[in-house]
Length: 247
Image 1 (cartoon, rainbow, N blue to C red):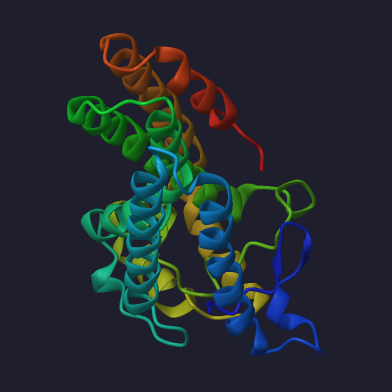
Image 2 (cartoon, rainbow, N blue to C red):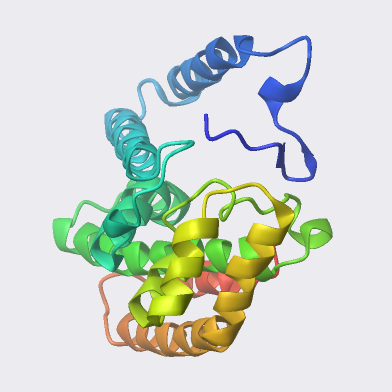
């Protein structure tokens, strides 16, 4: 729906000639399979209803995050005044943090028989912070990562995405740099994309990200180790998967 060309090193499904917009229905079929499988393997299990609720809640959250992403930066339109850190964090929390980080951990907690609401709230707080970090990494890799490694061609600049990089750039840019972003962000000409990246480099955004990464890791580590409601290795395993990832 955002016009991407590749995903995980392969053409996006809808880009296949024999698929096209049938991909919309394929997505509905795939989502329906979730509930077929849950019914087949968990009906009668004490965790069946909580799992159903988790899947429904996470689908709802992610769909809203995707919607906020696309209405903040509609394809073919640019309104840089909407690109604030508050808006950005709201988008990534719902679009990425819940389904990527909190959801699998919450499923494990449900299956382990955890019922303490305080434990779930703690897990949500830690996982949302971790999910925001994960998406900010994604934004960084979209611009500075190697497409051969990350498995997709970064198009956040061309697609005028409300990304962490452009939000940071707009907060720090001089009038001249802001004018370059205004004129070039959201266009597909290679020279314009290069000009935006040049502003990013002038503002030192790569170094800014690396500092954010280190600081956020230390914050999450302290929060994980200071609590006793959830075994810390649950979070450390996930954090180890994403810290300083290259793809």
